[in-house]
Amino acid sequence: MPVSFSTLAPSQMELTPVRVTFKGIDLGGTKKNATVSIEAMKAEIKADQLGDTTIDRRVSGHKFTVTTEITEFRNKDNWKVVFPWMAEIVSGGNKAMYASSQIGRSDLADAGVLLLHPLSLPDADFSGDLKFYLAIAEGKSEIVYGPGEQITLKIVWNILPDTSVVPARFMFHGDTAIGLVAASAGSPSFVGTGNGTLTGVAVYSGITVTESIVATAVTAVANGGVFNVNGSVSGPLGLATVGIAFTSSNPSVISFTINDGATDFIVGDAFTIATTAANYA
Image (cartoon, rainbow, N blue to C red; front, side, top):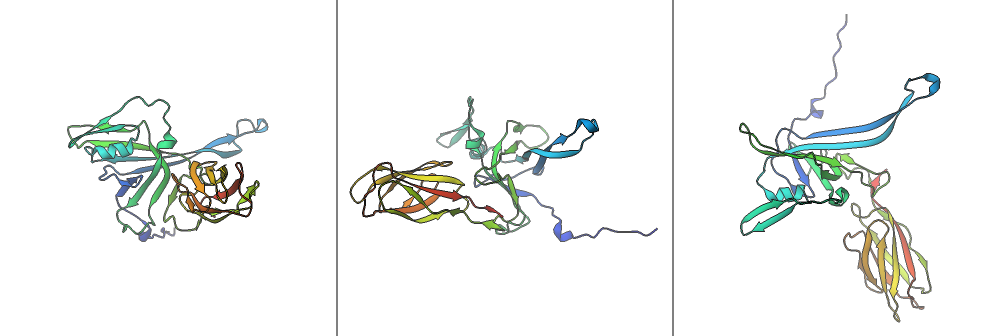
């Protein structure tokens, strides 16, 4: 009987711990590995004509979780990063953590980027990175005490869908620059009386989201005016003054300049710009 063997590529195999970074903060030492769980939940499709036979399974949801154990247990700054709903109390050189009732607090509002970088690769090599766009520590997180080994802070991260792009995304494995289609903006449309223009529109990959941004005149003056800028997703973005370059604040999703025309703007005049977040083709 002939014997066959698998074709092996050792260069594609890995043995390494990872650096765990949340919201740009390195959480330091880890223990007992980092575990990533990826689940596509599926619903069974059946028909009475075939009894209880499963004809097909279709994706009904997604669940991504990451489990890490942080060893620098005494670093209370890390606690505040991991658990943003807790209060860090500082008195002189001393620090403490205070947990109070936070009923109704939004996980989505507290979520941020969780990044796992293999330490076998240089910092500038992102080919092995796992990036989770919206991660938040779950209630399953726990402190592990014991007489036989060091204390660790075990964190179970729940990964939420990032709906700033279409379709919504969860994670990226590899260099996020590969195949990225940059953020873009459509041509501004205008409804109103004035005949000024909106020019110099700039958007930013990684910050700009898919939404409609509306700049509405709230103050009318001769040869000028002030526009209130709002995003359908980003919310209030600031005030733009005619003739002065504007960059939205918190977040800086767009920049542009509103220019005066021969006919002045009146209150209620409005420019609308459709933006599209950076995504992958």
